[in-house]
Image (cartoon, rainbow, N blue to C red; front, top):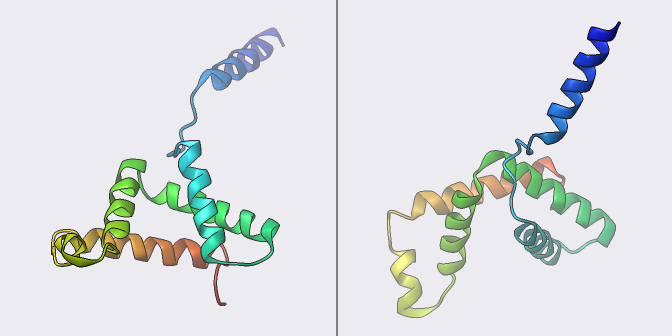
Length: 117
């Protein structure tokens, strides 16, 4: 009986000391994503907090944080008007990032029941 007990204690201590394996985003970025999601999809606050948190969790499981930052930066920058925005809008090398971001957004929103059903 003692070896099983020691094994359990050893495994428990080992598991508590391990960092999370999840592809974790910084807290501030999680909060900003959920706030922007709620703003873009009005509805009951408690429901939307849960749905938007679900969407971020799904997104974080699909993409690394650095890739997410690159995609969001490009998507936000293409909305800049005039010549500055056209540098990215007309740039063929960033179009795959834009498409990937939009596809991921559609996928996570569908999975978390955000938007029209």
